[in-house]
Image (cartoon, rainbow, N blue to C red; front, side):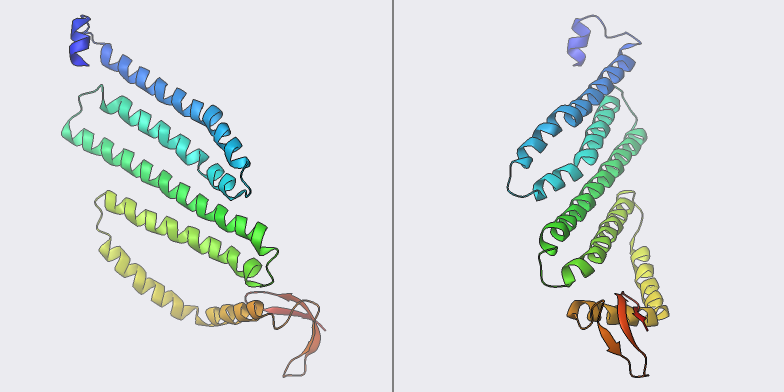
Length: 229
């Protein structure tokens, strides 16, 4: 590129580097807009012809992260290619672009996982005779998203050259302390999980407790069961 610019007699132009930055940035914006407005609808039309809408949901979930990723890549190239950056500045730029790219990848993975759970709940869970589909999958969905973002956060810290070993150790000890502190709540949670998954009682059932309390079951929850006496 430098030799071509020199042949055109523009090697000493002061405005050349900023102009190249602007042109590359504009190309990145146009490419992201074309992908978001034109190419992505075509992809959705193809996935809409498949027998299941799982692929359609998963593709929709990646629309925003992919568009933002194209824009971030374009901004990175528009700065890194025309400008002669120092080693320190280039390192900061590389880390910034890496963090943004990794964050967008984490968003895409979390969105795809969430849509996969949502598809199963809407399509398969409704017709499933097991109560676990509609009762447990929503909480598994949240836990999966939290795990993805948690692992992604650790990867970002590692990319920023932050030592995550003490953090992981402290999280383990902190988790143990929290588990001990909320032990009664966890016991009620596991008991409620067992009641709901086994289908021992359901709303509308008439039950009698050991203490003599009787009534109709109104709601079976994770931590408690409500009766109408």
